[in-house]
Image (tube, helix red, strand yellow):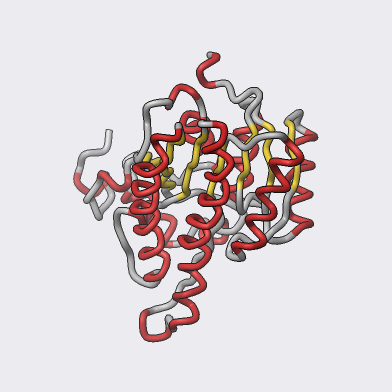
Length: 264
């Protein structure tokens, strides 16, 4: 359907060298967008861009550190010079540090906040400069189930991802009059190469028990949400957080359904 097509659109996806960022970039390219792949590592950005091109997509690579605002501003300007416009920002870069509060020091805290929250504002701000000129834009921030819930051991991540919700709504209110929508996607637990080490662990099963769909997601299952929010089909959707979590954040159940005799 044409309303979901991204033909003629130019998208920047940050943190797209691997994992869900790469999946987002691949999905937007499959929907027709020219996708500019960002990663702090130039080799990773080039490899991801080449993989998208090899699959038939239109892609480019642009390596820069999202936490360096001056560098990010120059990179966004370079992107527009190369491609003539910027329509979509998939604001995805992020990290996670697992430590209890007593050893989660202020350096850990600041690093996670800088990458997972402050950089999203900085890159969005630079992209909005160009989007405002064309009176059109789609900004999509990557949140998490931790944007609306919590768990022990990842305090800075939880704080940053809650902040992403506030950032999304604040930008939506401010940029809406310029034709720019701002939304967020809240992924649940996704089996990427980075976390496949949990397969067979108690933690893998805990996630399954808490998730109504009773499984972890594949990265490609996030693509539909990104394509929707980036497309004309979502032209009147802004300030929204779209959870793609298999129902986890709607479920207070802490024990397997089978243990309650409710399994079909």
